[in-house]
Length: 497
Image (tube, rainbow, N blue to C red; front, side, top):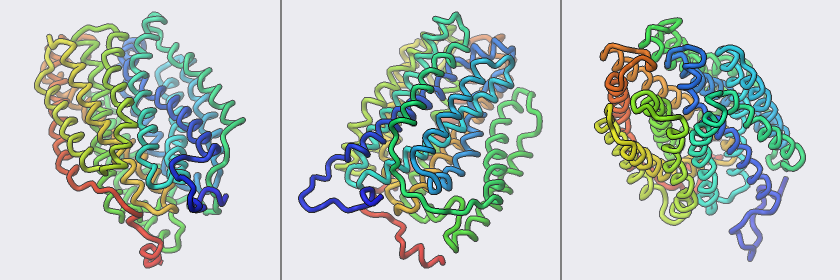
């Protein structure tokens, strides 16, 4: 596969990708759009599903949490998978899993089967995200990455923006029957699978890497324990948790510690399941930390805000979806602009104002939401949040992964995607827990029975916690730099052997 790594010949303009590489990128972007769209349609549908199955909000959050839990377990394995298998078979595997999961969810007779369908869907999504990132890093030269990452951010922003709006409109069209969301998604996913089988080229270079089974077990128990424990916090606040949250948290932390020790040992002979030497790149570590805080804030926001709009302001689902649409579309439209600005000016002039905007949006919601808050205020604050995130995500992805050498791309992509999901689960857990604590203090934990004032009390507490968390985002943003070259070199890694 020499064309992937061969230097550009003298006099050849290096401002575009080859037709084959462009085709691979377009198909991967389309597939990621589909799986991201699916992931975010649930946020608006959750209140309807809660009512359909007669469950508490803390139980309903498992539709998003089980998704994040599966991603946290499966994504670390993709670091190994992307080295062993080529692009097309990995793509096909991901889409088959997604199609099977969508079919299960569409036919789910009880809530537990619906969660199972989401888990199988998430297994496909978990493979697709690192596959796209690793492919981009393999085929796109350093000076074009801001522009290409900007295009990726369109997909990563517009899909979540359209998701809630589409879900709201479909729920209205299907008379609040949430199964319609999955039946609409199924033919789209099948079409992507067929196109992938026929047209996705093999881009990556494979190498034989042994699979360390002990590492797989340690990471699965460690990450799932952590995400499960975080997710149980919300249920514990409602009094519905099966086990005390601290038990899976302690077990998860212990297994993660053993996982880290195991990887440090395997790294000495270049056989790590997930190579943690990516963290020796300062820019990668800082970018990862900021992305974690950003994802924590975003996931918390998208689980609590629809509940507030539905049960405190008594809005229809389609209105809720359309209310979230302007912010997401703005984030998507700004993607290419932010990418070009990154290529020209680097990340700091973008991430500092971006972090400030995110924090201001949370403070506005924490202070301004009440039982009779006008809808325009919510839309304005959410649009401000989306604007801030637009200035954060593209520069952080690009500078963070750009600080790694090529052979750590798959590991860096897997680490980044895993931390994102753990942070997302933490955000969901934190916001739902504070929502439940605030509502319990006001006298009611069931959102379907609570008054607008009781829900607003819980929402205020949740967003206040988010507002304080985003202050860390602002503080760290001043330390992000643009790597001129990988910050971890082959020579420095050789010292570990």
